[in-house]
Length: 248
Ligand SMILES: Nc1ncnc2c1ncn2[C@@H]1O[C@H](COP(=O)(O)OP(=O)(O)OP(=O)(O)O)[C@@H](O)[C@H]1O
Ligand SMILES: [Mg+2]
Image 1 (cartoon, helix red, strand yellow):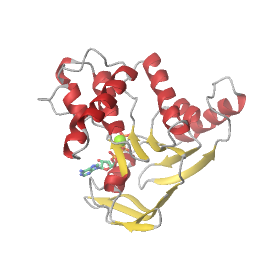
Image 2 (image 1 turned 180 degrees about the vertical axis):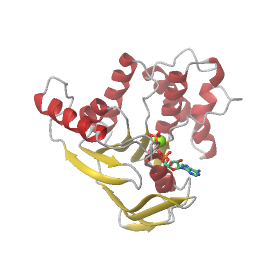
Image 3 (image 1 turned 90 degrees about the horizontal axis):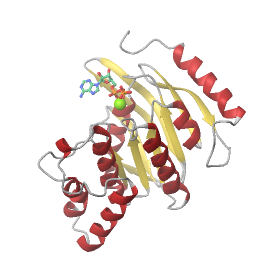
Image 4 (image 1 turned 45 degrees about the vertical axis):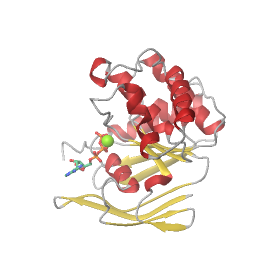
């Protein structure tokens, strides 16, 4: 479905990644885990055209593209909600710019507000709600696009444990019931192991795929699975062994 080859990005003379390859198959839930600052968000920005890669080929369903653009819905790490719009108007923004059927889009937004625990906050402004609520609103906005491929950059990082678990189930549902293909970044190894069909463990700059883990365990998964616990310990040891990007 998506094939990226030879991706390279250099910022101020510093190579963030070079010659990086990545592929995603239809219906797959792929998760990237790696140290802070290694270049994960930069990779998503390059894939979606938020920023241009210095080199690299993107192929979408066999066609070469400059970037994924409208083929993918992208939830960026920063929530990017417009402060002067209510949560509902923020959620409806993609619908307005896309000239879609507003009645249908409003009904879709209402369902998502209920599903993501935002009902009653439709007319609040971003500064009037918590960070976790802003994050959920950004997730609603991403899901409004109804694209086959969804890129999520730490979508649940600001949520409490219970809400997080609920939304992890929602992400699984998107894959299993709605056949979405998901490429997600997370710092939470347990979250990666609960949701992913494949996890890429990334090394710091220049960012590279250090190891791949294919997970065939049926979903929904539970953390009492000894295999998952073993992989978690292994991944943690791998990440702890890496110098952080900030430390150089
Ligand atoms: N617009 C920019 N200009 C210059 N350098 C940048 C820019 N955006 C990112 N970088 C640099 O690229 C590197 C990778 O940043 P990026 O945000 O992709 O990391 P990340 O893996 O997403 O980190 P985190 O897990 O903390 O979100 C960092 O060294 C960062 O300083
Ligand atoms: Mg990031």
